[in-house]
Image 1 (cartoon, rainbow, N blue to C red):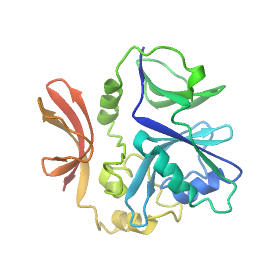
Image 2: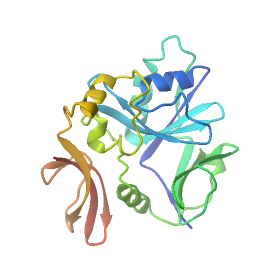
Image 3: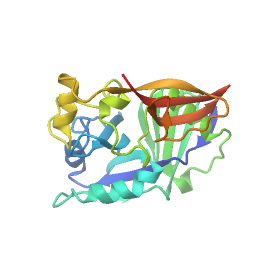
Image 4: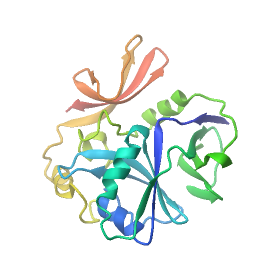
Amino acid sequence: MQRARLSRYGLLSVTGADARAFLHAQLTNDIEHLPGDRWALAGWCSAKGRLLASFIVIPSPDGFLLQLARDLAAPVAKRLSMFVLRSKVKIADLSDTWAQFGVWDADVSGEVSWRGNVVSVRVSERRFLQVGAASELSEAPNADEVQWTLQEIRAGRPLITSATQDQFVPQMVNFEALGGVDFRKGCYPGQEIVARAQYRGQGVKRRMVHTRAPAGVSLQPGQEFNGGTVVDAAPAEGGAEVLAVMPI
């Protein structure tokens, strides 16, 4: 079993009596009907339909956890809070007090499983996230975070960071193919533009692809690469593996 501490992710909690309805009205996926033992990929868009953040949404005993890029946690928490208004919702940034690990080559039962303040989230076969209060996750890592990042790239799962925020409609990073957009759920910020791009083919002139970069090339999210924009990159044998949004 391999276990790596994940530093590139942040974590928000959304709690309160109206937490489910609030997130359902803000995110690209159906949170209203998300069972407690399932997680969902979802995006949060601007009014222009561009992704401000990508989330793994995890039901918790008192609401939801949102995993997102670490450099977006504080600004997204602040901006999301502006939309709470009179709803009974509390948004908190847990990035500094909760730990996150990626675990692979291991068996785990169920998609979302809580034990106290620690949750296991199976993201693919024999690969899962372990998230919880730092005081309850003391086991030492035995692998590097780069290995987890490489597996996420191979799974084609994008992570929106500050360098790529507000650049892509969800379809550009294949969110709809990954199950991160529900086209029947109704309104959310940018919904009309996202739907128009899906059904009329308007605005989606670029798509995310999995590609390689040669040895000696160092790539970061937001950089230009072969006529496209890097979403994520990690060192791999002979160079690097890359998710990049390229012109169709």
